[in-house]
Image 1: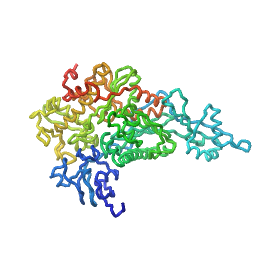
Image 2: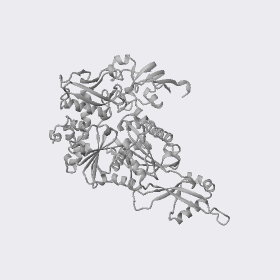
Image 3: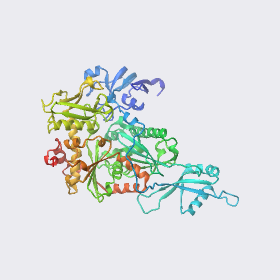
Length: 632
């Protein structure tokens, strides 16, 4: 396409200009410009979350299902359905933006991650070699191998990059060198000797650190942490929104998008670009680290792992739900387009099934419950909620299709946990007034998942919402009739950031009940499948970013979590990133991760007898079986 056929689309308030062609959607153009617009459905036009405002020029569009005639008259458009046909100026409102401000902090210190024995696969070996002569004219590599053989290291391979550096480094260092050797372990055969490979060669003079990068590739966000392999120090992590979110906010929408023409390549490019942005931020914090980085350990759900590598994920969502890969070969990280040295290798955590992925295996590794006798429930609450139940002897697992409500999806004024999101809510029944806690302490823009739980729990406790999730008319002055039935006014337009009323509708509550019911019935099904009861649980471990802001009492109040003493609950933070860190620090931990994967027995809940009955019974607040939530 020639330059004459292209025109400028200016996105506000970012003042980013992107070239566009006739017929391209505004959403696709924004994606190409690196601007995130919320599109839960992947641009299919069925979620209504990608609203933008036309402030100049024109686009081809119609009101559709989600915009009223008045809103369309006021220049609001769905970006996925608005087609470019000339220069235009497009404003992306706050509620439609993929707000990454939370992740733009310089760093975030994490909980300490330590191993019992520091044993990374990268080892350093120093050699003092006899320089070549007419009498001893063995090749440089043979000379090194001979010295290594004397140390008991045989049959070593060498990276091409190290081989190319070798002649210069040997002579500049007067044949006194240090080698970085990757003693890769054989996962399938623990008794096999490690596969040793020389990955770098440097002069002996001066000191060097050796690093690994632990990465958590989440559906919403990506985290990276630098790990010192010789000291065991774990440096503060950095994060950013996963660039794929503009192609769909859940794994199913991304699998569908990947099946489009060039869809897989676009999704892979987005996650690679996201990781590269994090590598640049690490470079700013720790200049020169990439030259000293030899390993990357990556944990992600099954779909994210496939999209990272560029393997079509289509069959993950098709019966009998068989992913192309559950274990992964060791990969050259730069081959995927990551901006690292050629000697950096990538190891991806194994998955258990299509919907219980490497992030859960990594989280279980980080939690340590795989080596304890107490009966433990491990949960990662999200759109695709994962559950593991077991102890050191056995483990069962399943995935629950909870839907997007926990991340603000499917909610009239829902949004992610970002500045402007209502996170806390307190209701005074006597005064019939409420108090809001907003992330960033500014005016509210919407409600995040944890905020929705807190609102519903408080209103249910006060008798404003009944067991069916319906508002009790006359119980609170802020209940009013809305487009979708009764709704509760959290903040009027005059007090909100988006100049619109922030409300919780009965449909929002219904979506939350569906989501919490999917999770709770999953716990019940797994526990009863092994002949136990929820009351037998001795510990509940909550992983993931959502769990950090979860009010346990409110989560129990609505029936999301089992009714157990609060001291039995433990939050471990980003278990996926922590598990990847442990694997970087210890070859044995990497081996244990694969043992955990093998130990887990996966249940497809939709095919497990009794699950649907339990799900239906959970569609009340907190449950139809009052004994499950009886105090005492």
